[in-house]
Length: 383
Ligand SMILES: Cc1cc2nc3c(=O)[nH]c(=O)nc-3n(C[C@H](O)[C@H](O)[C@H](O)COP(=O)(O)OP(=O)(O)OC[C@H]3O[C@@H](n4cnc5c(N)ncnc54)[C@H](O)[C@@H]3O)c2cc1C
Image (cartoon, rainbow, N blue to C red):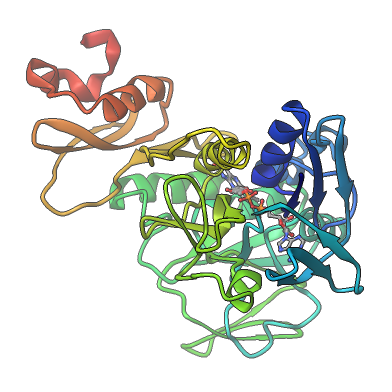
């Protein structure tokens, strides 16, 4: 019995490692060149905190890894995948871990050579090359990834402007006071931020905004969100919504094919963080091995990896029918806690994030807070 995993990102590598550890023959196929790497750490690489070598995450011994090979089709009847170079590889069980791709805004000029998405090691190497020549950079997107890209480019000597369509940075995580603090911090580090900035076109010389403003740029980075890579599955006739539809065991509509990670859609949700992608990979591996396993989504956390601007958020960000407890202490940081039915359902910490694990536990436990509610914003030291 042979296993084939398509996609050598964190989820695919995890599945392959687990199958190899169970003594199974497994082939891991990825279209990116070279050794699999830690995508999450790309921002740290851009910010010179780690080297390219530190990013390497080779699969376990026993995994046959085919790098730089793109799977173009799945022949379900013959149980084989077909690569774009015509190579055919048979499977007994296929695991799709094709991840997601950064969304390229449908703007005039978005395909120009000085425009990069922020997703792969190749994207980051190009950004580093551009930064070595200095000059102006524009990052379109003021969410987590856009800000990490901006901070890295600024650290490498570029003059960076962040263009963000919403009225504040990271509007899905931060409310106005916290976003204002973050923007002030970025300004001190030399980054300009334009909110409510509606980009109309990218030109060889820079960017044109809807109000006619022209901003010069040698490098334009688009970081405005991701789309699950589900076209391969859709073309093979598998059920696909936003992502590849899977059940709790990570099975697709074809029982011989599983899917996990950012390409998958589980109970209507596609994940966008590495922890749930890996949790799904563990379930997919167990299902592939014939063990009973069920994936249950749980609250996840995300952190902004910019030196001096710690932001951590978990659970629900802005939900109806919730109460917010806010602590805005100019010295001790900013906290916004969302409660529903006397339970903590979401938290945003800015400035002082050392209590994050405690809030994460409270969100996951979902127990009534009772008297804890009154001291909740002050952290475990007061509980
Ligand atoms: C710069 C950056 C920073 C991030 N920071 C964080 C963070 O701090 N915390 C966090 O939780 N998450 C973070 N993420 C998100 C995290 O990287 C993803 O959640 C994670 O990579 C998802 O893993 P995956 O294996 O599902 O998909 P991917 O990592 O996208 O891997 C899928 C792989 O499959 C390949 N592939 C696709 N189609 C084919 C095909 N047809 N044939 C062969 N190969 C194919 C792709 O090229 C890719 O290599 C960050 C992402 C980026 C880009």
